[in-house]
Length: 514
Image (cartoon, rainbow, N blue to C red):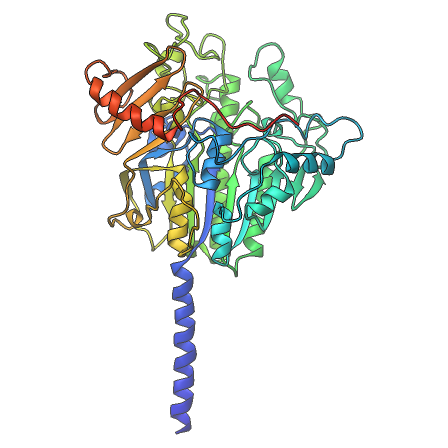
């Protein structure tokens, strides 16, 4: 009888443990890596020929990647869209603050003073509003953000807590992110002095090698600690501290946003005769991003949580040019064969015309801040070993404002307010999922919309015109079909106008300057 009781007790404990294991695998840890200005053409799996990105490529090879993933036209609205679940054609869902407020503080003004003034400027957030990190908090996760904090351009401790972050480390001001050697950063409300970094502007470099730019970049006086290395250390520590809990780690990296800055040229490019010195430095920034992805993966394996961690790699917007070189490529971009600037009506940026040696936008038209596909299409990879079948490429159209709804679905968290995003969780498992009828995005040129079947309408402010493209047959947006299909233009225009609140003029909801 005693043996039977012991056996039953053992069985109960065993199956209880098994159930806990299964429970854990059903809701994984999540790491979201948000690259900055990384055109998808810079990645090896998309055909990049010069820069090898084996760690990111491995995520794509063993995970699911989306062919038609959209971000926003530049960083601040992209991060706001990601964290809030709303597209950036609204003018009433979130506001963007001024930049540089933590850099140009008058004597006698403390960071506490700045934060207090900023907090008064930010409008009150509705009680039922929910942000990405809060979705994870509601599911019992520890949340952490490391890097380019919040959505910009300046933020505060109070805002970060309202947005759901249990832990954070990084820049409070996105203008300061244009330098990579910060004299101070912020960690959980505390200003942290970075020893050996003495440049008030975080050692922001020149965007060109000529006129002393090369000498300035490699003068390492007062440039001891590179921000991305600091971020990597904090992320590794966050993983170690929370390996026995469920955690969500969000890394909005600076890489490879310019101006180009790196502690040293990567050996892969040092002796490449086909690259200028600034091109070598830029390639090294992309290479560092890939190396750091590899180090995060290795840490997951070391801690025994690799198979219970979902890693997502994506970006905020399309490619940008941070490596102009005399005789090779200019900035602002122009046709290097004719010397003419692109008017974005009859002519537009293409890598082969502008001399972009890296073809960072993967052959698409346009760059960051544009409403061409090269300005808004981004890489998107989901990698979860033994849970999501690898090696798949999905054609389903998705957007960065879908992530909040997708994670809420995964974690069974109720979202009490209507968002623009939808959940595409089922698509990761090759099952039928809800699909967008269209996605919309704004730009400095004006808004644009892409439908599920591939029709695209874009507004061009400079000429007050709408153009129409059919992307399945026109990857490079070479053929404007507006005159051929005027009824289609009117139909799509009406939807776009409605999504923009009746006003297609490029705009961004800005707070007053501090």
